[in-house]
Length: 336
Length: 209
Image 1 (cartoon, rainbow over the protein chains, first blue to last red):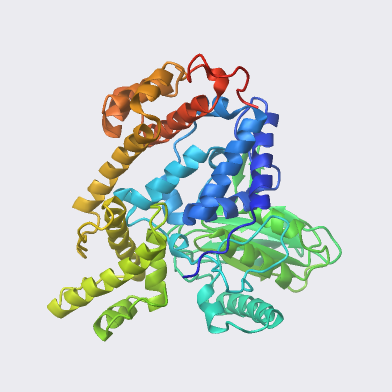
Image 2: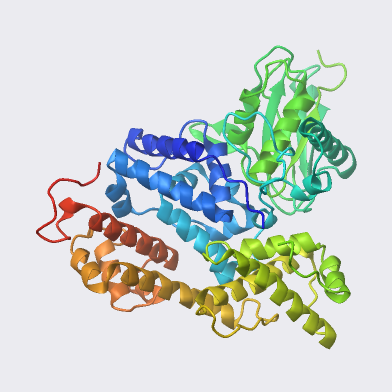
């Protein structure tokens, strides 16, 4: 009998400490995510929902951190929001906003309650998405498919079916194969399927289009969503030797809104930075700005667009994003 | 899991028609075991029992068909979960528990929720003793949302979560979470010598540190 590869306990404790510290530092005190930790929180909590060992270890770590900080009873008395179990069952924790995610990370009771509902609420029997059934990394099997440099912790899931077929291969060969598979799948999806992901729920595509109405040589990024659900758009402007610029929202007066394209609609978006040589467009069914920012920040400034794209794809897959599409577009020919 | 029996051709064809391999079937059963604190062998036993049940259904020509892989996946998980929940409740060495391959989101699912109510209340009493738990109720905070003290009183009065939700005008999800908060609070008081709930001979000091 094999068992899931456990997440390092030190990493769980470190995250628990940071989550509690962020709560104490907030004014007024409330659950908030530690800066830059959204991806890590999604990974660890997803694993905690699927794996008893991780759940118990993380719950113990958070409880200990709350006690050390003297806020354990304060938090128990305060309670928290209702967690949208149906949304989580369908789309995973990546679909939650920061406030709900922070509440889960800070409250072992909220986490245990959500877990119980995911497994035993009959209303959710038909709602559980594929993320819920994804295999966990298994003891004795290499994690090469998701083995990657990461500042935010261990991976959650890995396509072990692929790994099993090549069990016994040397690790570098597996890593190379995995990178190749990611790139090949990305290219295939981008070129052949026009934004259709494996589960077929997100049909969206992006392209650049000249827009002479804005000025000679100007252009827009056009996003067309032919699917039946809203597509959130995150655009990364990439230029050789320049810090990438990530745009995922628009601001009108004091109000900021996510960039999104409704079902069956198209939208023209002004590129976020002049002079960019390429744009990575990430289309997701829930906002992914934080995830994309984290991944992009970890890349070398001179990273090639395809490498940035592969890193974003790997992260979204690891986080269990239910469906998404990424494409690299370039300014139209003749653009200065 | 290597010693689990392989399904016969009819079951394999049925699994395969819904995009399932043997490995994936086993993984689904393993996932269904989560949180039930069963012996490691329970999952292997569940795999064998489910295979046999499906084979019996195949002979009768009564294996259900599903429109897509996701629906099939949910069906398998639910059947496996129902079986394993029953296994977790059965006394060791007791009667075997049947698999009903048609019990998908029906009677047994309701039983699962009822069982969850009982386990929550039963575990707390079994672990701490009802008298001691009652003694600490007065130490629970009495402020919304909803007050842990009132919530715990209702739980120990034998009210169901649905009834409590109605009485306190909150969602059932709020009740289930707050019951966990109340449990944790009680545990924390009991482990804290300075809380005074352990008796007069408890050493001074302690509390959150």
